[in-house]
Amino acid sequence: MRRFVLATAAVLGIAFSAQAAGEHDAAMQKLADTTISGWLADADLLAAIRAQNAANAGLDQAAIDTLDQTWRAETRSGSGPMSTRVLENALSRKLRGYKDAGQGLYTEIFVMDDRGLNVGQSDMTSDYWQGDEAKWQQTFGKGPGSVHISEVEFDESTQTYQSQLSMVVVDPETSKPIGAITIGVNVDALP
Image (cartoon, rainbow, N blue to C red; front, side, top):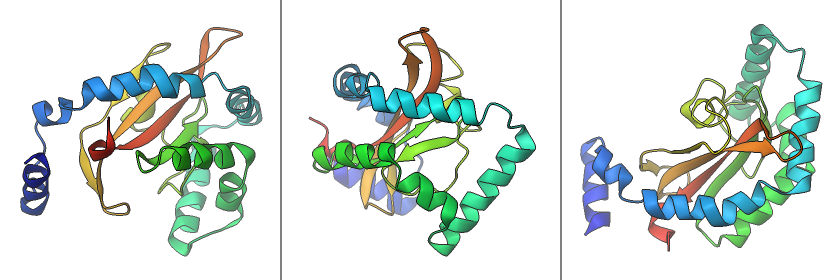
């Protein structure tokens, strides 16, 4: 019945209500508290974010916008040196492994630095800078322990109903936020 209601809403262009969006919040929070929190302690993930934070420390907003424009152009063309470098790095390979291990539960996984720029990702994102979006602002911007669960939306690329689960990444050495992670979750595959 839920699939019928969601499919009908999608066809008719009806926005999901807060109540419908919240239907999966408990399962999403459980996923955050168990599986995803373990990923956030991974030494390779933390090292990749720390390295990119150091490399990007001097970027101003104009430089960030230029990087984002380059990424968007590469997305439209299908590839390029910037997107290839990110998609083929060690963290992206690890994230693809997490996605594959989820056996259809995860539709995408990406990690952002302290500026909201992608550090690694399982799949190509449409933009490189996430700093202007709730997934980064409601996690990194709010500090340790922050979790953001988006409304359920139909994802054309994966043909699934998904919600994005985003969490702040905290450096265990300093107890300070260093980045964020977003996981697209196929809500029909939630346990």
